[in-house]
Image (cartoon, rainbow, N blue to C red):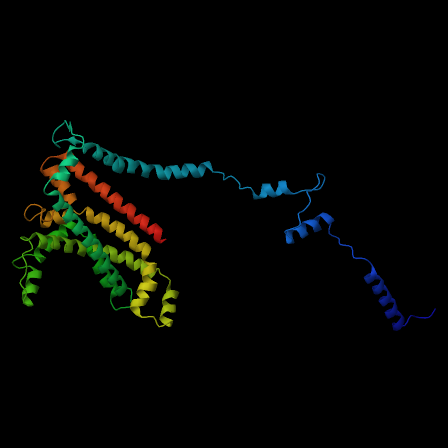
Length: 359
């Protein structure tokens, strides 16, 4: 038998390939799947409903897609309760209960040394709104609070920006800036009495050296309010400085590098790159410094005792002390404290709302 040559093998393969090409094409995909695929690409084509005996996976898909109910571990719930309940109990006993009791007392005429109280309704609130010294006290509180918040935050931010740079001895300077915040307010008030003393105070001596007539801080109501405000700003700057410094050290360095490569000026880089990253910190500080400023008592009590001339530096929180413990009118003092609570609550809610809109 003759051995097939390469020519005969090539002819046989070519004939087989020709027969395969001439056969009709049979799609291995089932007809129903082809209709569904066509309907997916052609909006005008609707797929036929699946027959009852056709296999379906909708039940399995639904079981996979359905959100699973979260199972709570009883041990985790018990642990959370053990951690939260003591704190909630402390808040209820030492914060919310006194708050509610204070609101209740504001409707009574009660001497703190008397076992009985007389119900007045809104009489204490009407008296507070119509008294001659009320608006002087409210004005002192507003000026002191606004000046303290703006002054301490501006100075604290400036010091944080300065001491965030690589400077010699910056660690020592940081400690010196923060130190006044941990010192007692009464001790600071005593120290600054000598700073503002009209006879031999440091401020008086500096003003005389430059040829200026020093004011008498203890005999002028406006200068006295300036004195206690400047003293409290000096104490609060350390707190603001530390919080801003931590925020600056945690900001995104690549944004500063990009702005520096683009040749952005330092002032523009601060407003467009640095300060937007400090907005959450600024919001936090504005709330905390505002709340602390509204409750300042020790510095005012040590330096001026609310004077001069009666209410020259009296704030609302200091008036609560005077009415409750000096005049013995605990009900009226509770009224002023309740009004302070409402004012702080409204201001805080406005701040939170504005922050939410910015976010």
